[in-house]
Image 1 (cartoon, rainbow, N blue to C red):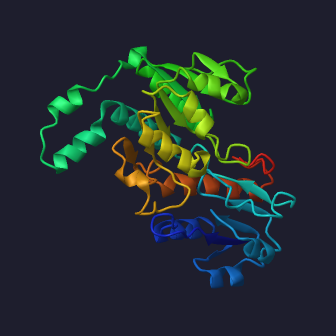
Image 2 (cartoon, rainbow, N blue to C red):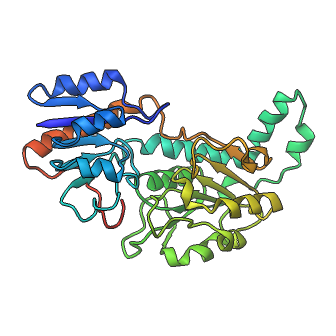
Image 3 (spheres, rainbow, N blue to C red):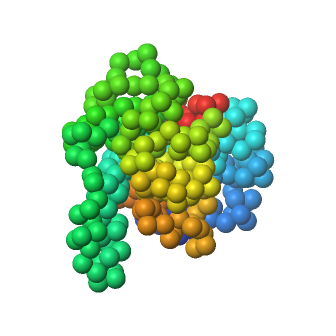
Length: 325
């Protein structure tokens, strides 16, 4: 079987050489090739049976005439679902669940830091200013009296909910399947149609859902208008879930108390972006998935799926191409 490893998105989203070597050693009967450039893709994609990648162009997919299965080392697969892929027989799978714990921990850390004004404490530290008076004037309700709204209850969202509940927060979730029992840690589960109403009572909102055609710009001016002025928004999902123009307006006008952002529509974030200078913004440069080892568990999942693929067994984490996740 011909397997092409085409995970290359510098500076941090490139499959390390050590993992390339591990895959190659684990699959001695297969032809494993590495494609880290457009030219390499042109040479390796046409006869590839399996492609490991996180993004694809229409030209790439047109080249991959023999591919039967593509696996992403990421969770989001929007960059793989180029025109033609959804209608093709090619199976898409992802790394859902592999990095859920560090992402969930990061989300909770951002909620706590933003509510407690720790980003301001760091800013004042760099200015060598004793900010006791400024920070003590902040009014921060106890977690036990606060409501956490988790939008998206996949592997990440469920972990965020459990962590929030363990800290004493009342947790409400938004998901499509409301007929199922509420998962552990959630006091209530509401449908997407109830989002704006749910926003009116939330002290903290965490976005933990994939970007699809339906969820793009999920949080815009109308949603910010529903939020409490002391609410904080945390995004550990996809940048395009938020209307950035509306976000900047809401933050600048004090419509909401603050935002902690780990994902942006364009990365790196433009140095000219107003978000850098807003005092109620905590910028996290898309690092939520990184814990003790980002790549090893992702490769473990891929190798398990290769074994399943060869034996005709169901693959793990198969993506619903129509739904986008």
